[in-house]
Length: 170
Image (cartoon, rainbow, N blue to C red; front, side, top):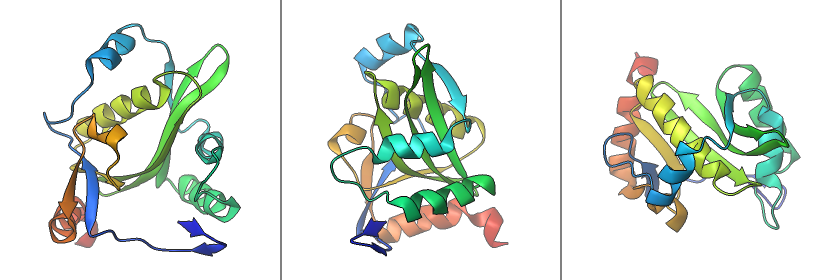
């Protein structure tokens, strides 16, 4: 993360994760919104724009060096975006990094109601389809907890991470 002009590495004692099994929960109101199909879901078509959307807030760790670093990862096939579009353009989404069977969610944003939440639901569906075992959120927020996200101690997280990266570590 960028902090006061420096790039810093964080490894919290308690790590937020979103379950990719049945514990993933879609709130009732969001289920209703999903049935209306308010957005076209796209993948990796506007990566830089998603990062820009995520950085447009009063306080952000996403500075120009972070944007360029993640865009370089995107060009190499490691960083990905999930995007919610409508007739008026990009309305929300999220981005993160995929390694092995782990996805590291970095940030999300919404310009219209539920856009980032809908992007998250589509991300979870895709991760399940492709055999991912870990969706890392770094920290647990009350927003993510509504989806069933929970915290795990660093030791348990490192075990989950090692399992998700097994194929890369051979």
